[in-house]
Image (tube, rainbow, N blue to C red; front, side):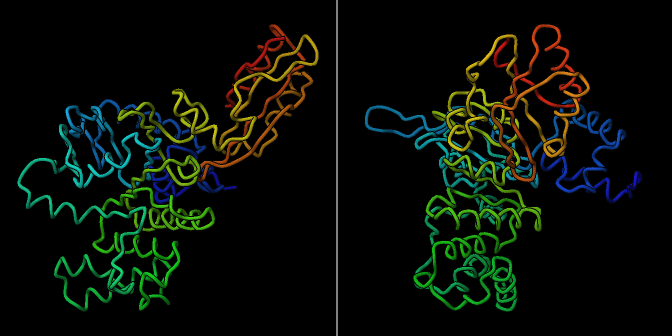
Length: 395
C-alpha cells in the first residue's frame, strides 16, 4: 500500500472534502484522507473558513416574501438566510405549503422577494439595472416538475430554444444540441416530439434545455415528483453525473427524503417559511433535531434507525446502546475487536447498513452485558475508535 501521494491526488481529496463534507468514496482517496497531515490541515482550513467568512456561490440574505390575500397577508418566506457552495448539490425539503417553490424561484427572481438580497457569484441580482438580471439569468438553468416543454417543437428544437433566444449562430446551436443529447442519453430521440416521449425522457429534455446556456447553477423544482420510483432514480443518477462531470452547482427542492439522501451534500429543512434545520446530509439524517426533520427521516429509515425508544430489556445488569458507524468503519469489525479487547459479551438486537450519497453508514442497537463503570469504559473504547455511541437504557 502506498503511503505517499502526488499533489494532484491530495488536491482531488480536498475537492471531495469541500464538496461532500465527508470521507472520499474510493479506497485510494480514502487513504489520502487518512494521512495525519491531511487531517491536520483539514481542521485548520475549516477554522480559516469560519474566521474569514468565505462566501458561497449563492447567498440568500434575509429573504422574505409576502403575498396579499384579501384583507390579510400571507408570509410565504420569513427572513431566510442560506448559502450554497460552488459545486455542491444542495437540497431543500419541506411539506406542501412550506415555501419551497417560492424559495427556489427567488434564486433567479422568477419570484422577486418582498425583502432581502439574492447574490449569485458575487452579483446582487435583486439590485437594478434589470438588463443585468437577464444576463445573470443565463447562468442559472431550471428544470420543472411538469417538464414545461413546447409541444409543437421537437426535442432538438426544445433544447435549442434558449440558444436561439441568445442569438447564437446556427452552427453553434446545432453542435451544442448534439452535445447535450449525448449528455442526457437521447441521441436517438432528437427528432421526436414531447407527446412521443415517456415522463423520464421528457425530464431529460428539460435537463438538456436547462444546460444549454452552460449555466453555473441548475435549479430543480420538484424535478422527480411526477415520475415513478425507477425513473426517479435514473434522473437522480443523471443529475449526480452532470454535477460531477460539469462541476455545476445544483439546488433542488423536494418533499421526499429519499431524494435528499441519494444525491445531496447538504440540506435545509423548511417549515412555515423558515429554515428550521440545516447541515451536511449525514448529520441531519442521522441526528435530526427539529420535529419536521424527524418526520421526514422516519419516512425512509428502518426501525433501528428511526426509533429513539429502547427495546424491552430481557434481563437486568445490562446496558442498551445505539452505535453509529460512518464511512469505512461500516464494513470493518470494529465492534467485535473492541468487545474482545474489553472482554465484554454483547448481543446485537437490531441493525441496518445503508448509504447517504457516497457515504456508507450503519446503525446497531447493541446490548452490552455490563453496567456502571464497566459499561462506561466499554463505550469510551468504542468512541475512541470514532464510533458514535448513544445510551438507550442503563442496566
